[in-house]
Image (tube, rainbow, N blue to C red; front, side):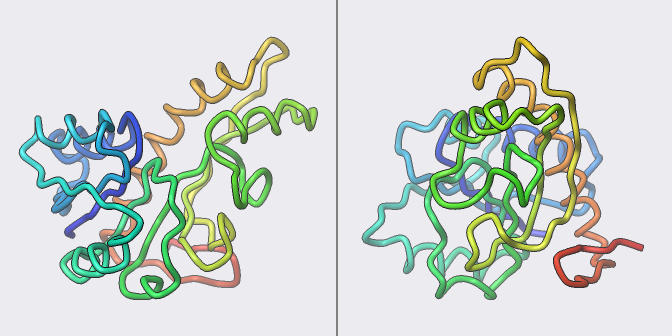
Length: 195
């Protein structure tokens, strides 16, 4: 299973995938490309330190460059990638995204990072979590693959809640890839069902 991982920042989700491959948990996976919208992303250094090909894209060449890469891989992983994937690229290969809330709550255009966790805290929610979902035209509205839940503490700030959400993201992105590698899932409505 060849992966392209799209990043914009520190790359902690990327690192969790790298570690799962090296540790033997993802036995049928390899990262073919790490693609960044940010030339200064720490994620690029993580990739280079692990011998993974990297590519920096700009908005004016995004469609052309991503199309080439999508055709060479089996699954595309958005791991903190902040740009919306052009509609023309949807459907070429499965694209999955990790999001720091329990979708369909606190998703959609402009909802990323502490904007999400601030909204969670302001809502009064007692629980939050992370979601891995398929990418569709509806931003953060694709079929839900996996979710993991955690408590929202009374003393949480948007920053602390986001920081505590990261380990959940790392767990479920790896687990989603492991289950998807077996290709034994079906989509029913908004749910992804694994046997």
